[in-house]
Length: 369
Image 1 (cartoon, rainbow, N blue to C red):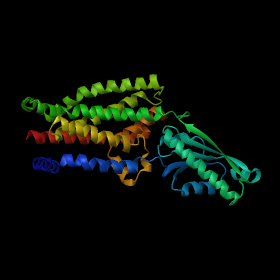
Image 2 (image 1 turned 120 degrees about the horizontal axis):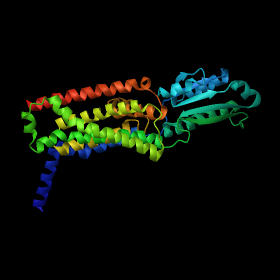
Image 3 (image 1 turned 180 degrees about the vertical axis):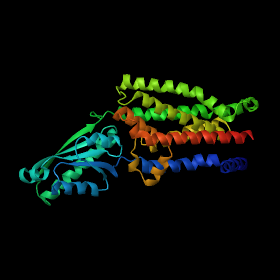
Image 4 (image 1 turned 60 degrees about the vertical axis):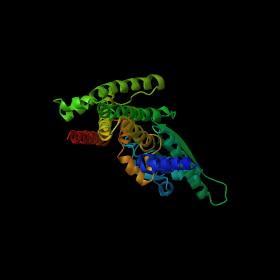
C-alpha cells in the first residue's frame, strides 16, 4: 500500500510541476464557465433601432421614448424617408427600423387603432426574431398603460412585421457565412502552423538554414501553396452554398474573392507565427485548434450578438480576425454592399496580416540566431 501511495504522490508532483497540465485541468474549465455564462446569451441588450416617424405627434414620441429608455434598445438614427432603410441596415449597427404611419396619434385617439411597422435585419435570423418580439412586447405594454391600470385595452396598435434581406428567416443566411469564416481560419492556420515545427522535428531545418533564401522568402514559400489551394476551397464552398442552400452572392463576387484572399493570407500568416513559437507539431496543433475554434464560435458574432455581451468580451472580440471577416462576408453575400461599407474591417485585417508577417519574420530570425 505504501508503494501505491508513493506512486500516487509522484504522479501528483508530476502534475503540479507541469503548468500546461494545470492549465488544461483548471484554466480551460474556468474560462469555459466564464465565456459560456456571459457570452452565450439569447437576451437582447442595447440593440440598435432606427425610427422613421411619419406622424411626429406626442404619442409617437412617447412610444419612441419608451422603446429607447428600456435597456433593450438604443436609437441609432432618425430616418427621414423609406429610402434610408436599406442604407441604415448596410451600416450594420441597426437591427430593426420602427415606422410610425402618417397620422398615427390622431388615428389612435379617434379610431382606437393605428398601425406600426417593424422591419428587422433578417441577415441575423435569431436577433431579428428577438428584436421583433421585444418590440411588440413593449408596444403592448404601452397600449395597456394608455388604457389605464386594470381596464380592458380600448386602443390597439397593429404591428406589421417584415424581414429585410431574408424574408423567410432561413438559418442558412447565418450559418453559411459563419461556417466559411470558421473553416478558413482553422484549416489555413492549422496547415501552416505545423510547417516550421515539422522541419525541426524531421531534421530538415538545417537545409533551410544553409539555403540562400531569406526568412521572408522561406515564410512566403511556405504560405504560397496553401494560399492557392485555399482560394480553390473558397470557390468550392461558395458554389456549394449556392447549389445546395440557395444562398447567392448579392454583392460583387470579385470583391468577395479579394476579401477572402486577404482573410486566407491573414490566417496563413497567423499559422506561421504559431509555428515559429511552438516547439513541436503537437503544441502547434493544440494552439491552432483550441486557441482559435472556441473564440471564433462564441466571440466573433457568428452565433451570439457581440453587443449583448459584457464590455470585456467586446474588447476580447476586437482582437479576433473572424469578427471582421464575418461582417465583411455577410455584408457582401447577403446585403450586397460594396467596399464603402466594409473598408474599416478590410483595413483591420490588412494591418493584422502585416503584423503577423512581421512577427513571424522576427521570430524566425531569432531562431536563426
